[in-house]
Image (tube, rainbow, N blue to C red; front, side, top):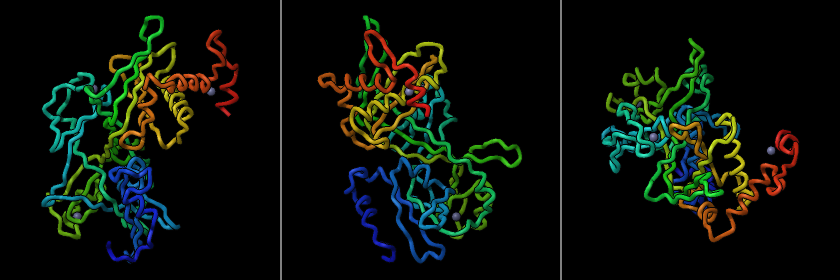
Amino acid sequence: MRNGKQPYDTFSFLRNYGFLPNYAFPSDTTLLTMFNQDKSKYYDNWRSSVIAIREFAPHNQVYFLGNKYNINRAMVKSEGGELNIDNIYICENCNEILIDSASSNSTSLIKCPNCDAEIKLSSFKSSLRFPQMFSTSGPRITCDEENRQIKGYEITINYKHKKSKIVNYEIICDQNQIARISYEHNGNIYMVNKGSRIKSKTTNEIELHSFNFCSACGQWLRDNEATTHIEVCPKGGSERHLQKDFWLFIDGNHDVVVFDFPLIGDFDPTSYYTTLKEAIIQSIMLTYNLEESEISSFLNPVPGKNEQSIVIFETEEGGTGVLKSLLNTSLDRFDKFIENLFRILHVKSLEPYEETMDACITACYN
Ligand SMILES: [Zn+2]
Ligand SMILES: [Zn+2]
Ligand SMILES: [Zn+2]
């Protein structure tokens, strides 16, 4: 409790203490505290971390009750000025993520554990777990011009495979394996915000600017501010308080299913797998009566092939049972899922094969 002046917000309270179903895991939510201009009042704004990693990111602006709040500070634990920094490596070949922290040492690895590609030690990047953020309403103190140039953030989703925990399935047709599906309970999903995408004033190209922070005063600093901050830091911060050029991340344990289908026909792989991924998502939602926010997905490259892996995960941590039941062969859910998948793709019957002609044009592109 700070001063007890903020409006009592039951919803925030319940979410904070995990009474609301979507927020059952406190690690799953992130807090943005929003101060009015003279700091006499504040509001606590909780969001699911999956959304906060973009919306509560440094230098972003949040609109609330008609006011504009600039996200300018954070509360980060530090020991004598040093932040608890982890190092993250993302494999260029397969998108596998490696993390080097106090509890898991990855810099001793020579090869990517997922695809065997060589690891470049220089590509490990300083990264900080997404902290509690602060914002202040009112016009921004630094030049607004710079803000207008922000074209969003570069955010990636990465799956850290734990091979010993993955259960593999094959889809076999006329004795030929035509697809592979894998399932991992509580798989490690990371979201990484690599920085703001800013349009260069001189070249007009989009440049990626990762984050800078002063642990003495708790301020987020733009690249030009970081170089001169020591002279103006309100808390007299020194060089050891400055953390420059790092990423922000969140991680969670989610049930994950990966679909590996071959590329059939002469299609652009990204369009092909994006369409298939969306059809799979729609079919899972239909089969289990889910909302769009309950399930998420992305594509991973398949090294050495023109193919992509479709990664589907439950957004809630800890496993809701949906993906587990989908692959439970003693249930009929998978059959139902395939049936729905064909329906979504406008297939009328399989034997003899019949499609609803022009259905996609009339149903999906209007
Ligand atoms: Zn790899
Ligand atoms: Zn400072
Ligand atoms: Zn269609």
